[in-house]
Each structure stands twice: as structure tokens, then as C-alpha cells.
Length: 364
Image (tube, rainbow, N blue to C red):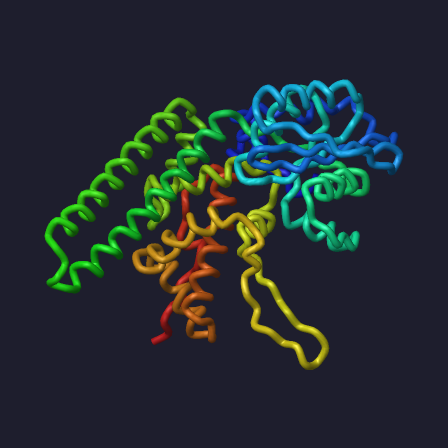
């Protein structure tokens, strides 16, 4: 394939960090012989709704509890239906255990973006929305759309993302507490006991963030390739351990063959134009139809880099001078940083700010 990079690149080593069975597990499946069995599973926090479709006809929905025992019962039922393709939505954390169980049992599984399933239901003119209707829609999605197998990340990748997202939640709580403290200090009427309590909460949050960060770094230290990725990321001005963990927790779970443009789309940083005829001309905005955790992980590094890296700062000034608003310029930096990180991991090279943006030479 054109553009395929050498095998020794970091991106090509990512599958070594994942217990991916997709290529070997399904290599003997002949997808040219169209399967006749499809299943859709609507995943809730407490309940799983299964709809099996055969030869285009859906059977009555079946209910299972989202518990280890009932998930095991559901998996055993589907294993007895050889060749069935199962489709479910990525619903927060509630679909993970079921996805792992289905994949590890050898069931053909695809996990779709909820927005894709929602738009598919709109195309089918679905007027009702219930768990059973959603499960039926997912079974039809599996039947009509080309099969794309779910890539199983390794357990350490799941753990790393859990660390990153928990640290992000605590960081948000700390920021809110600091804002609250700032408001309380603004008036002399605030009792000292309240100020002391808020300061204690901030100190405790900082301690918890440091503790989880240390645990995440211990996990990374067990895997040399993860250590190398961390070293590359913190080599970028504006990215410390916390932001590097956040980026790793999202990016390393992606399929390793995605392009930098697909990374940008996954992050929801791709421009969204809205023009129609001669009268409708809305401003171009980023789509935000992607991973908000990844956008959040890139935002502060972009702000910091534009202040402390001369090449990133020059790029920001160049964009503003050409009519971009400051926030648009920051989004452009986030997008360009994501391009740079993709290239760094692919070629196993440190960040080069001169390639990010070449500062024009002053004449005279």
C-alpha cells in the first residue's frame, strides 16, 4: 500500500501493546459469502436488549441484565450462532465489558459511534425511540453496512485511559474550587473557616492528582514503548506528564493505521463548512463531532505553546494577521499539534518546531 511506513515505526509497534486478535481471529471468515444472521444490542447501564435478525426479519427483543452473569449468558447464546455479526454502540463505559467478552469469545463484533447509529435511524425514518427499537436499528445497521471489526485494545491501554480520564475529572474539580476560592476572597465577609475548608479541598485534590499521575507513570514504566511515547510527548513545550497521559489515553487506543487527517476528524477538529445556494453562508467552525477528551487534552498545550514556543507563537500571529480570530487560531494550533504528534509517533522522532512553522526572515 502506498504511504506505508517502515515496520520499526512507533505506530506500527502499537499493535504489540494491544492484545489484538482481529486479524488472526477472523482471517478465515469469508465475508464475501453474505451472512444471514445479524444482531443489535442496545447497551444501558443496567439492561441489555438483544435483537437478532435473520434473512432480513427481526425476532422479538430479548432482555439481559448488564451484569457479569447475564453478559456471560448473552455471549454463550451468540456463540451458538456461528457467523453472526453483532453491532452495538460505544456507550461510555457500559459497553466495554460486553465488547471484551464478545470479542474474546470469537464473535464478529463491530462497535459504532452513537452519532452514526443515530443518523442511520434518521435515514430509516424511525419515528419511535425505545431500547428495543434501537437494538433493531443496530441489527439492521450490521446487515446493511460493510463489516469493520472492532479492534480490542490491551488491558494496560484501558487502564491508562482510565487514569487519564479520572485525572481530568479531578483537574476540573480543582479548577472549579480555585474559582470558588477567588470569589470568596473577593469579599471580606467570608468566614475564615470557609476559606480554610476550600483551600483544604484544593490541597486534597492536588494530592489525589499527583498520586494518580504517579501510579499511571509506574504503569507506563513497565512498557518501554509507552515510555518512549511519553518521552516524545513531553518534549513538546506545553505538554507535561498530565497532558501527555491524557493524550496517550486517547490516541493509543485508536487503530494504528489511521492517517493524521483521520486523527483530526476523530478529535472533532475538522472544519465544518455550511453553505447552501446563494443565501446560506455560515461561518466555518470545527465539527466537534469527535472525542471531547482529546480536544480537552490539546487545548492547554496549544495555549502554552503559543506563549513559550517561538515558532508556534509566530504561527499564531500569522493566522491572526490573516484575519483569524484568536480562538480560531488556537484551534488551528491544536489541529497542527495533532498532525505533528502523528508524525512523531510514526517516524519515532522528537518534536521539531521549525517544521511546525518556519518563521519568515525579516528583509532589511
